[in-house]
Length: 396
Image 1 (cartoon, rainbow, N blue to C red):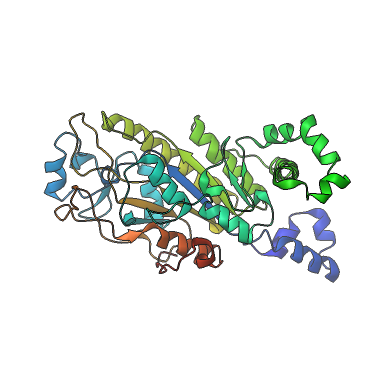
Image 2 (image 1 turned 135 degrees about the horizontal axis):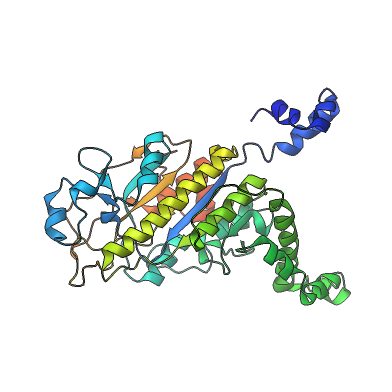
């Protein structure tokens, strides 16, 4: 956005437009908002079936291994002559056609784990499958580069491991007003009023006290900033729609937050997968389509990158309950206006060359995606956060 056009939208600003000192001061204040890059992470919890999401409909093995679970060719949204999307993903096809979607296939990690909790920990901490950490990759980003707890916000009542740092944690809230009201609880106020007491200062307040005081300050800032704007967009009336509506409100208000985290649950489809995944993917795509349009209408989409992942994919072969069991490699969706490689980033995995358990072989380590986002989008030292050097990909 041109700052002079931005200034002219206000009568007061217009009257001061030709005062050089004002223009200089205004540009310094707005520089942190205009072109302020944000990252939105969406987690599809439970292990989404990637093979019925991005579908190799020309591959006979797909239909052979899934005689009743495969999506009929006539229903698939074709991306090219070989690959298509689940029929519930029409809004994503529009983003694909506009050049706003990059699909990275065969994403996983060495020595994969098929436990939901353990695999999610691996994705959220960005560690090897045989190592354990108490901090998440976004929490460590906060440790090194966050200026305050609300530099990262999870739209939930509790905080995921991904958002917990070694020194500082992100903020978890579903409703900025409720969060602000909670921060005014007498217990919080009592701690805040005594923060300068000698016995507390001597012990540096302790980690808990400092965290609570920081949370109170963040709660007030988040509420007072985000209430300045509302959306006219109609999001699907469900919890995921509310998450993205709140996220859009935060972003469009110009809140000083770099990372947002949300999730959609229910993807553990061992039984009768067809209807469950159809409903879940439709919810994801409808909400995401509205979210992107909301950001575009407010001029903030150009500075927002959206990453969608699930902790693992599903088995190639359907099970006896017309569902799928836990697998390995999966697809990752990258949505944004500044994609270097739009559409299909790489080929899909082979269905004839599987691992010893009959699962897809991973090609791309998910941490190379994180490293790319950290380095090329958030413009920070990815190795400092991931504790290891990973090659950069070429999608942004």
